[in-house]
Length: 217
Image (cartoon, rainbow, N blue to C red):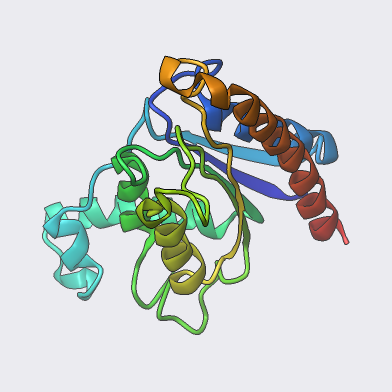
């Protein structure tokens, strides 16, 4: 049966996070389609991975026989994350926008799994073509034509990393205007937020079913 790698990075817990509510909907649908399948879950907020260090970085470009004990330990941690990704049939990532970018914990995970000669810049990469669904929630709207269109760094960055560099098959779900219910200045946008939220939840179920059916074929 298929394996789903589910990664959340919101600093807010379940029930208070826009991205987690949508990744939860995706995962529930996935589990309904794959009751005997496997879900590997990483909550990068409560259990962050190490940020990339010089030892971990340099070890990726040198013969393991030459590694210092520190390099060997740091590189082993990277390899564990890479093997987890390589073993997935599909990937689900919650990527809320914080200060126009992704959470630093998610950036740390990406820095660890991006290994030249293995996961990118590699003809025999084991992750190329794996479907990945990213829930890119945001408090406002950065859609084309909006005043803050030029501040959209989440989707643009993740497209460059996940699709262009790692070769994953990328799809986005974008719940927006999530701050409208809490911000009085955005009160008139609450109906648009509610519509975006419902659309995102529906997209999560639809996309989960589509990926599940594709892998089962």
